[in-house]
Length: 109
Length: 109
Image (cartoon, rainbow over all chains, first blue to last red; front, side):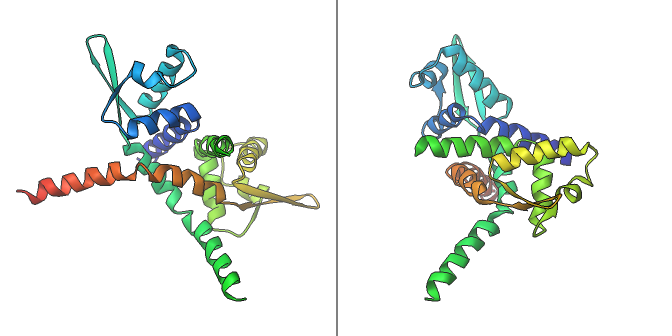
């Protein structure tokens, strides 16, 4: 179970470590679903290059692809991001602590 | 500025995409600072292999290394994780929305 969660985190963080992939997810955030060609349009890269990024996102479970005839549509699946956020949350006290210390310093003047 | 933030996110997410590196950060979470050999002890890998992981974490700004004589000590620096978490937070409504729908379903029985 722990190994399984580690594998999810590995894939999720690796998928998020690329600006094109993050931009693809950001576009899907505002839409119900988009076709691959609609998703590719704003990017200055070839369609196959965008499709490779979509494959990485799909393998990480961050998008769902549906094929209808010759059109593949993609939908955001944010579930694995929750695991990633849960992992990060335990470190939150470090930066909120830093803010508290800053606040205390300016309050002490 | 945007490019700079993107580069931080790239490096942070890539550094977090490995179970050994996450385990190293988790150990540093509970300690003020640890020497490289103390950090390496629980891992079934060579010291140079652990040191490579520490280099990745250091390049990503997630740890700070200090050298005193022949001893290198490492300290957690959680700052870049805050950027990563800020990026993830905008997707939070998707999984909390899913929970709301589940709650609504079970409440409707």
